Length: 121
Image (cartoon, rainbow, N blue to C red; front, side):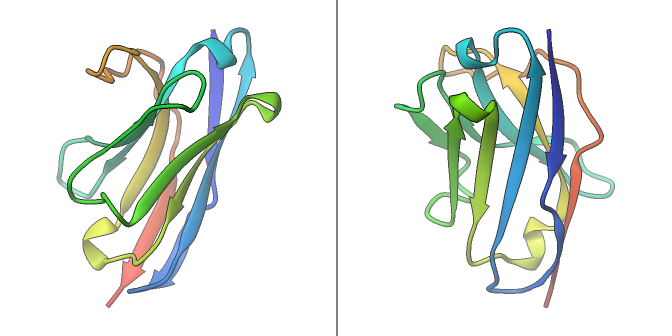
C-alpha cells in the first residue's frame, strides 16, 4: 500500500552526523507506525528505531539509544533518522518499513533498496 524510498546516506568520519529520510507514497502513511532497520555485510537485518503513527512514542535499539533520533512529518509523508556520534559499527545499509504499532515493531511491508551509511575510523 505504501512505497518507500530511503535517502541521505553517505560516507562520514567517526563522530560525525547524518540525517536519513524515508519518503512515502501511496495510501495510508499517516496511519502506520514506521521503523528503521539496518544490515551490515554478512549480518542479518536488525532493528534500529521505530515511531508510532502520531510521533508521540518512539523506541530505539540499545546500540543507538542516545545517539539516534527518529521523527516523522505526516504532512510530508516522510520519516527521518537523525544520526549523531556515528561509529564505524554503524556502517550498514539502512532501510525503513511499515511496522506493527504494538511494541513489537514488526516490519510487514516490502523492503526497498535502502541507503548506504559508511562510517570511517
